[in-house]
Image (tube, rainbow, N blue to C red; front, side, top):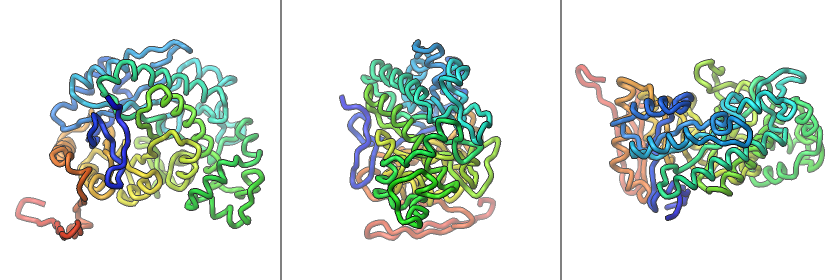
Length: 428
């Protein structure tokens, strides 16, 4: 039996499960919804009759390795058992060294040993609970735990294929400053730029940092500021190479045990300030996590983390279609592991799948969605499920009509398809 994989079909990447293209009609649970057996069962119970076929659920390093070198997969096994009973596929979200630009899900033995696992410094000397990606020990420890998780999944799930993909870390990047100023990070910043960066510039000329490099005559030796200048753009590229290198160590160790498709997700920049309630937005690196897998540093991520299959966006704000286009171009395919769960989000699912060939979507916090939002998402997924077998082998288009765009005309092969909103008495 072949394991789930990404495969190009008619020039589109598709997730193949049980030998057939599989459209992820997913929903992501809240961060605490897999923190106990009771929470898991309660959360999955809310998903009945909602037309989901896949659940994205956190798996935290702190619960998997509470004592260094001793692993506890009890909650992972509960997730698998409950998902199988509900006839749902599962995408574990590895909350390892970082989650939402923080290090809140690392084990206590990492948290209490800053000498072994140094903290990042958004400003020189500034205290932070964010482990630095420049410490070798944190990458090795994170990779060992993730490899143990993937080894366990291969042992207990390869015959079932409940797990179809895995997310590595969650919204990585540095908050509070554009780069890490810890001693190890400063030493790396003041050393010669790694050769891989020049390789990324050659392969991905749309990197944002390419403009300042060309202004300096495309030098191929020197420190980061010598080669690219002293700017937040330089800092962000520096951090992107560092985080991608860490994630590669983790992902490669996991794939050596069980080579399921793997991806990272991004907290996007936007013309809004970051909110305390919704981790999204920010106009400067450090307000949004600096170094995360955004399109303007995607080339560095692809060069330094080749074991990843996709870079993916968490879409809450901004131009939905533009973000989809950017990520499909940057990563060679599209999956949306987090997005709005309201009626707008339900409608945007059709754009992602119909216009951008997304292998799936996953609104966040679906275990607490209620009322009209729940009905809109249930309806959208029910409609998509009815045509899912056709999507891999036919041209598709998606529309989302609203007050700003009440009518649209789509050319699909030899046909022209028109859709428009009409207002009738008592109905919008």
